[in-house]
Image (cartoon, rainbow, N blue to C red; front, side, top):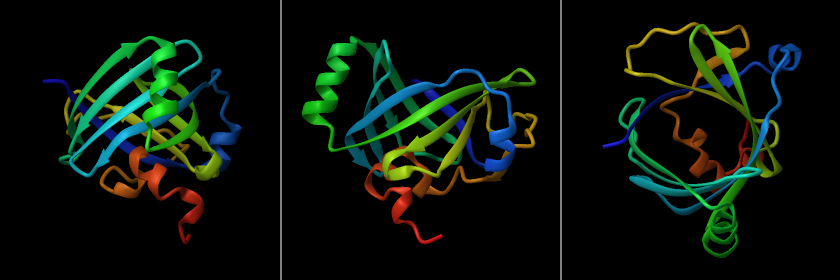
Length: 157
C-alpha cells in the first residue's frame, strides 16, 4: 500500500517574500472525486500529468497512489471530468535533508501560501525554517480538495 506522511504549515508571507527561491512550477489541479474518505485528483504541470488517489487522513498519514499519465490525458480529464479545481505555483525548498513543498495559490485561493513536508514517520524530527508559521495538518479546510469547494477568498479571517 502506498502511504503518505505529510505535515502542513502556513507560511509567514514577509519572510517568504524575502527568501531567495528556485523557479516554481505551475500546477493545474482538479478533482474527479472529493469525498471526506477519499479523493481522486488529476494534476497537470507544464510537461506531465498525474492521477492520484488518496484515502482518509489519520493524523499526518494516509494512503496515496500516484501515477504519471500523458499530459494530453490529464488535460482531457480536467476539462471533461473535474468537478472542482485550483491553480498554484509550487516551490521546492531544501532544508536540512528535507524538501519543503511550498504552494502559492492563485485564483479563488489567492493570498494563501501553504508549505508541506513529507516524512518517513509521524515522529520524524525536522528543522522548521523561519518562514514557517503555525501547523495546519489536522485542519481540513487547508486540504487542497476542500480549497476547491470552499476557497480561501470566502473565509472570514
